[in-house]
Length: 228
Image (cartoon, rainbow, N blue to C red; front, side, top):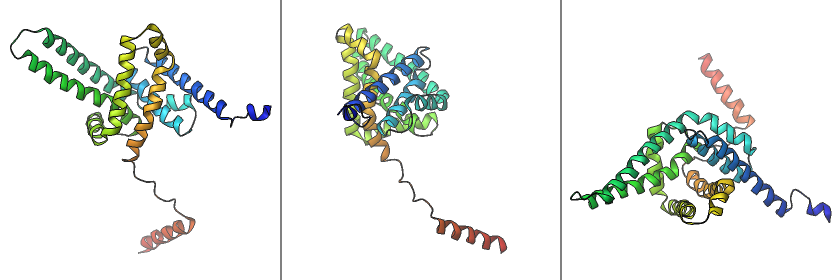
């Protein structure tokens, strides 16, 4: 009886182990995001680690720092680009909202539409960075293309992230505390399910492993070509 209760295969224990790993990833993300400039790299690493955790591949700490190191430069560049653009959009929305210049409401509406597009791109850009190797320009371009090509998954991700933001703005301090301590990683773990569904559509099926006979035949063919 006790052996069954404390068995690693017990669903209850597996659940607590999973929660513990998510909590630990949230701590790693928080610590590595403290310099602010590294938020892009730490978010990329968190998304990568959560997708690996879903498949039970590797160890959370190793996965996190592997991605953090490999994607540091490009993720940081992406973060700085989105930070500047986001600040410009935010400042523009505030300016046009209070402006009395003719046409200010139209300008505000156009900027709001750009802001929504910006947020949609932001939802995917670090996830794409964690999974694929592209230039910064292509990563940004694909973040918009993939978002609209997979609208159902994009909508689910949008609602969850928007809910997290609104909950932290308009609710009590307890929600902020929980979000900082574990909430962000839980949300990323949940939406990584949608990331995985989306990305699997763009990853070609792995070719069958070459058999021993295939290898001999290939080597024999190459040897014949050399003799000619």
